[in-house]
Length: 174
Image 1 (cartoon, rainbow, N blue to C red):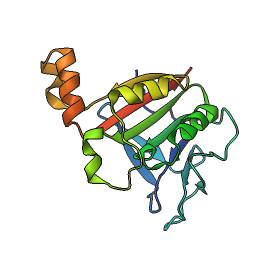
Image 2: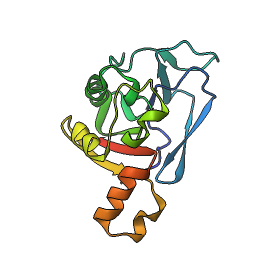
Image 3: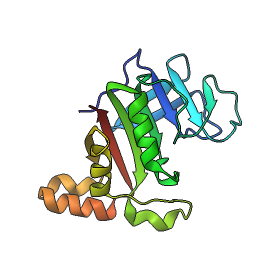
Image 4: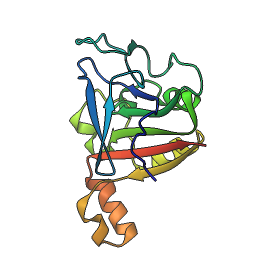
C-alpha cells in the first residue's frame, strides 16, 4: 500500500506552519519518511513563515495555487479539521495530484474534539472513508491502536475508533 517517498517525487506539504525546519519527518506505517526542502518539495501555509524556507508559498489550502497534475505526493498533517471547507481542499488536492498520486492526511479522531476548540470539523473512520471515496480516491485508513492486532477485526476497529487519538488516511488518486 504505502510507499516511502521516491527520490524524484514532487511533494507538497500543506499547512506546514510558520517555523518549519529544512527537514520534516513523517511517519508512514511506522517508517520515517523524510521530506527535504529543495527543488522537489514545496511548503504551503496561510501564515507568513518565521524562518526563511526555500519553496515556501503563502496560500490557501482550499484554493491551491498550482497547475493540475503538479505533485506526486501531498502531505496535510492536522489541516483538514481547521478548514472552513475541507471538501474544497480535497477536490483541489485531487486536481494537483498526478494520476496515482498520494494524499497523506492526519486528523484527530472524533473522540478528541475537546482537545482543540479551533477544530471546525470532526472526523471518524467512516466519514473519512466516504469523504475521500466520493472525491475519486482509493482510500486506506489507519487507526493506530496497539492491541487491535490481537482482537477480531470488527471489535479491533471499534476499539481503535474510540480510543485512538489520530487517524491517518492514505488516499490514492484514481
